[in-house]
Image (cartoon, rainbow, N blue to C red; front, side, top):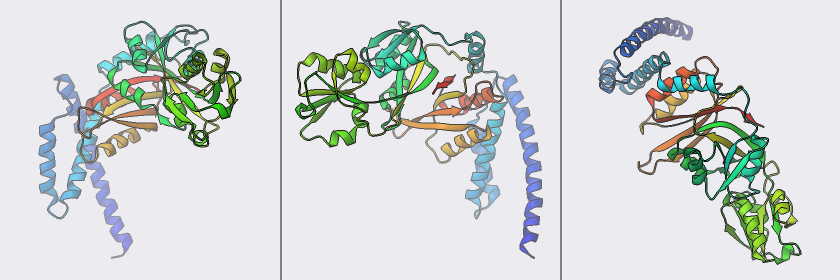
Length: 379
């Protein structure tokens, strides 16, 4: 026989396989309806383990491992399909309610919580989100989340990642502990400047203070200085204020030109960050979901079983829905050994057909699943 003859046989077998596959999924559809009618969970661990044992026996010793992969995939696809058919779930209703009740225009004015002091980059981001925000300043990112939860402020503004220094891990870790929803995001161009008291010179400087991210974003400039130490503080605006109140001409801050004017400081050197296109992404959060017209990004968080194939199955699910992932961030779960939470940003419109079905599948299949919001991003 020639190669094409063997391929013809493969094609015939595949035709039979996919015919059986369609029949199998049709029965899965009926099972989904039965489970829904009788209040049963889609996931049945006992049944799935029994199917895996059968797969090992049916495959034979030589193909046992391949048979397990095939069975695992079929089980996952069946469960996924059953979940996809169920868009009548609490989160789906909450999202539908948000779509119906959110005003059609993003507010121009609101109470907004920011970390730091006047002049912070979070303040500049808040002024991009809102035309006339009523800003309250807080000592830490933790306090910003708390201000949203206790109703002190309607919105909070937080930095989440930088194009040079990467993710703001402290914010990601706090996201796990607090209930909130992202309602909008933006990318803010960041320019760090060396600020000091009027009359000071670059040669006078022996200590530079700033936020850890600002220092990390300016390593080339800082390494060029001799006998100058760096000190981390809570915020770039706090750094500028510290210099202004210190009376020290040997102390400088990495901060914005806005803070130079605000705290009457001199700019010793402009734009000292490593990258000219240095940008920080900020999110605007609220206590309840608010979904404004044009929401084409969605953020989610979940944990996965600590076993082979978990990430593969999840990415396959996104692929089957035609979803493009723009970010994956993993953070350790402190109370669980070697287990992680995964944060995902999706290019997925909340209005797209199948969106709620995707969420239904994720909420049923994965622990710690949370929907963090659907929103658009200001460029």
